[in-house]
Length: 148
Image 1: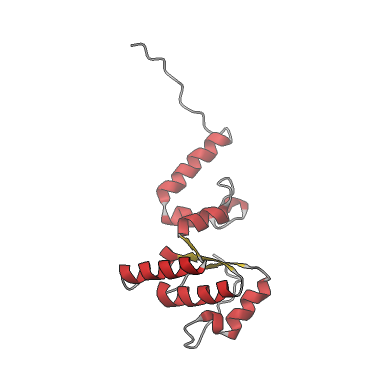
Image 2: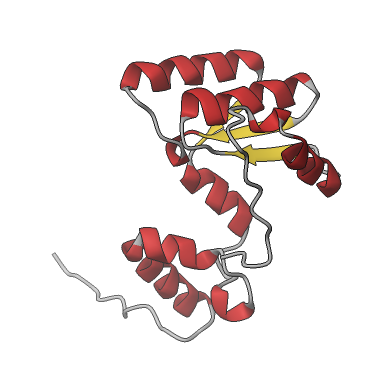
């Protein structure tokens, strides 16, 4: 989806926050709001999230975009992150926030809309219908008068 983005590989460092190339990439954005997901929520997600929030970053942990070994592990991670001030999010809420307006679609140069279509095709159909109504390309059904 973002072919121009550089992938930062770590040679075994578990906490990405402590890998200099990763930190440089974050710092170079000059942003203080981070959206983080990881292979494992109890390590790859949790460790950099906790370190970043300690440094004043506004961290949003995408819990369902990260793997978990067990339900207990996930619940412990959520509790730890929330207690530390990390905002627990899911992919749908992050996606909707990034999308910002359902009228923006991939045809207009915003590729994020296709994520919803790929993962939730029925939602894509609903968006298409709502867009058609709002742009005058579809008319609502005529109201029928019912006499009882």
